[in-house]
Length: 154
Image (cartoon, rainbow, N blue to C red; front, side):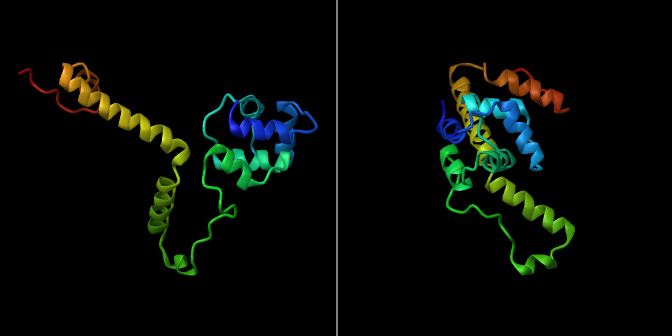
């Protein structure tokens, strides 16, 4: 099991089922599926998103800082970020840009996986280029799907 699963199981003193946890979360206004709750309780999960953490914290009474720490996420600040008052001067496009920057910076949940996967893909592509052209074939297929021209055979 994972550290977050161990924490959740320990906090589930009433030994509620995943369905009961999901139902309690939904009664509190959270959107938590029973399958998601079950995966986190048994340790068969990925990195949690913020809404899942909030739902589990609300139902099981575990502080967000502890849940985030167990998940390997930033845990020193548990309150939502509030932009400075000057942010009211931003137009809609600028606000979307700031929101996207924030998402990119905290995309550690999905980003850790994606980032390491993309780094692994780059490393594999470099190794493939050294050992033959095996890594180049998927790149050609992707280029063709995007409408890019296929390179000529040399």
